[in-house]
Amino acid sequence: MPNTPPKRLASSLFTATYASRAAVGASAPGRVNLIGEHTDYNAGPVLPFALPRRTVVFAGPSPHWVAVSSRNGAPTRFEPDDAPVGDWTDYLSGVVRVLREMRAAPDGASIAVASSVPQGTGLSSSAALTVAAARALSRLGGRQLSGDAIAEVAYRAETEVVGVRCGRMDQVIAAGARSGHALLFETGAGTMEQVPFPLRVLMVETGVTRHLTAGDYNLRREECEEALQAVRDAGIPAEALADVPGQALTMLVQALPAAHFRRLRHVVTETARTREAAAALAVGDYLRLGALLFDGHASIRDDFESSCAEADLLVASARTHGAWGARLTGAGWGGAVLVLAPGDRMARLKADIVRDFRTAYRRVPVHWETRAAGGLKTEPVP
Ligand code: GLA
Image (tube, rainbow, N blue to C red; front, side, top):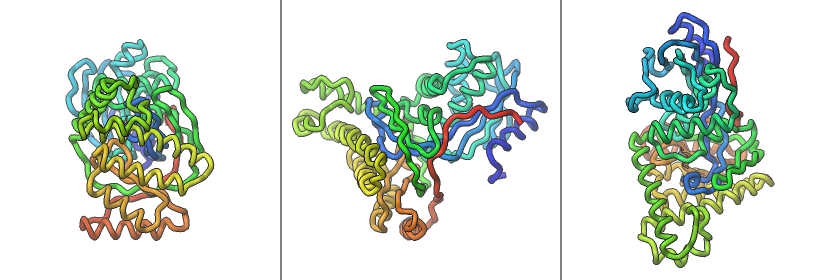
């Protein structure tokens, strides 16, 4: 049932699997990061928006922990206290363990999950799952947690239990998105500002999924920590990479190993770009916003080295054919490219980009248009 809405799918899956009616439900979206990549664990800003594509979780009381997903078919028992088993139930275990610490977990649950968020495309299907599960399971445990608290549960589940040392962007946008807006989240200060974002966006998937993403990602994070230490050793008392002033780069190029300098330069310039992008968006200057997106992509490609050839081709093609801007979104090493363009040029641009990709890779990339949607919701049980 590929086109069935995930809410219907999750609820019918629950009834079919457990022969009863769920007690609670919740849903949360995937996200696209407009700009601000790999800044969230360096105390910099991010500017994501939520997708209309969502993950829905229904749950009911049970003496055990058992979960079924429309993607995996058979119900699986899991033990939240066990070591991670390497599948999607690790995310649920993570959520349960953090909720238990807060005395907000039920004793057990039957869980059914369905999602329209594509997996492995850098659109944060994992935060959609953990945020929706944290809301549903805390409700089942008799607690009403705020959106902020839910985002924190989901963040801790992923970092402490699943073991991806991510920042807080994905969980925060999944919990706090507002329809028609992007969210400027200053991860260092913890401040948030909703910025109107009325545009339609073209998404083009590279079709490249890196199962090693967590390894590459954690490695980049270590490099950022080492770069910060080298910056401090060079006499700049920065608390985080995003705090390093742009003017210091000229001096630091000598002080840091070449690769570490490139990671630093990405974070420093991306921090400035993200703040400027939010300002451009706020006044509807889409030309400037787009130029910043192109620059951001070049920085990911050359300095952070987290792009891939397929994404580079899509971005170059979008530029050649007159897009306002384009860049690879999310953790990187594969995933999807977002393209901004005037509405009346979109259809033509789409055809041109798809043709260029097809000529190079002999396949048509999955592509779709979208716009900024809302965040976490409690779902009434049907
Ligand atoms: C992943 C992480 C986020 C963020 C991005 C890169 O999506 O979960 O915290 O670091 O990568 O910007």
